[in-house]
Length: 71
Image 1 (tube, one colour):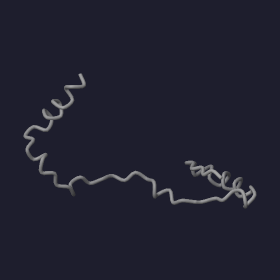
Image 2 (spheres, rainbow, N blue to C red):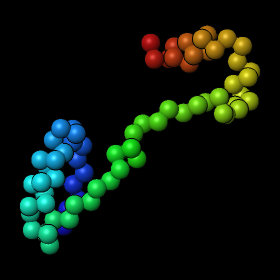
Image 3 (cartoon, rainbow, N blue to C red):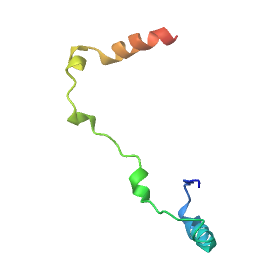
Image 4 (cartoon, rainbow, N blue to C red):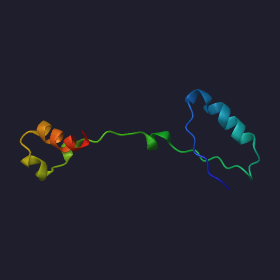
Protein backbone atom coordinates (compact mmCIF):
# COMPACT_ATOMS: atom_id res chain seq x y z
CA UNK A 1 0.00 0.00 0.00
CA UNK A 2 1.21 3.56 -0.73
CA UNK A 3 0.52 6.87 0.97
CA UNK A 4 -0.11 9.96 -1.15
CA UNK A 5 0.00 13.48 0.25
CA UNK A 6 -1.37 16.21 -2.01
CA UNK A 7 -2.11 19.88 -1.65
CA UNK A 8 -5.44 20.83 -3.26
CA UNK A 9 -7.06 24.18 -3.81
CA UNK A 10 -10.32 24.61 -1.91
CA UNK A 11 -12.24 24.90 -5.18
CA UNK A 12 -11.26 21.33 -6.15
CA UNK A 13 -11.40 19.61 -2.80
CA UNK A 14 -15.04 18.49 -3.05
CA UNK A 15 -14.53 16.92 -6.48
CA UNK A 16 -11.38 15.08 -5.44
CA UNK A 17 -12.97 13.83 -2.22
CA UNK A 18 -16.05 12.67 -4.12
CA UNK A 19 -13.85 10.67 -6.48
CA UNK A 20 -11.77 9.16 -3.67
CA UNK A 21 -14.90 8.15 -1.76
CA UNK A 22 -16.22 6.40 -4.88
CA UNK A 23 -13.25 4.01 -4.87
CA UNK A 24 -13.50 0.66 -3.03
CA UNK A 25 -13.28 1.28 0.71
CA UNK A 26 -11.03 -1.69 1.37
CA UNK A 27 -8.43 -0.46 -1.11
CA UNK A 28 -8.49 3.28 -0.40
CA UNK A 29 -8.57 4.95 2.98
CA UNK A 30 -8.99 8.73 3.03
CA UNK A 31 -7.10 10.39 5.85
CA UNK A 32 -7.96 14.05 6.28
CA UNK A 33 -5.39 16.18 8.02
CA UNK A 34 -5.78 19.70 9.32
CA UNK A 35 -4.17 22.03 6.74
CA UNK A 36 -3.38 24.59 9.45
CA UNK A 37 -0.99 22.04 10.89
CA UNK A 38 1.36 22.66 7.96
CA UNK A 39 1.06 26.43 7.64
CA UNK A 40 4.27 28.35 8.03
CA UNK A 41 4.34 30.30 11.23
CA UNK A 42 6.62 33.21 11.89
CA UNK A 43 9.10 33.04 14.73
CA UNK A 44 9.54 35.93 17.11
CA UNK A 45 13.29 36.04 17.61
CA UNK A 46 12.92 38.67 20.32
CA UNK A 47 12.19 35.77 22.67
CA UNK A 48 15.76 34.50 22.32
CA UNK A 49 18.85 35.93 23.93
CA UNK A 50 22.08 35.21 22.06
CA UNK A 51 25.00 36.63 24.04
CA UNK A 52 27.62 36.01 21.32
CA UNK A 53 25.85 38.44 19.00
CA UNK A 54 26.17 41.23 21.55
CA UNK A 55 29.89 41.44 20.75
CA UNK A 56 29.15 42.57 17.18
CA UNK A 57 29.34 46.35 17.05
CA UNK A 58 28.42 46.75 13.34
CA UNK A 59 26.13 43.90 12.19
CA UNK A 60 26.11 44.99 8.55
CA UNK A 61 29.91 45.05 8.31
CA UNK A 62 30.04 41.70 10.10
CA UNK A 63 27.67 40.14 7.54
CA UNK A 64 29.62 41.60 4.61
CA UNK A 65 32.82 40.15 6.05
CA UNK A 66 31.24 36.71 6.35
CA UNK A 67 29.89 36.84 2.80
CA UNK A 68 33.10 38.20 1.25
CA UNK A 69 34.38 34.64 0.80
CA UNK A 70 31.54 34.01 -1.69
CA UNK A 71 32.69 36.78 -4.05
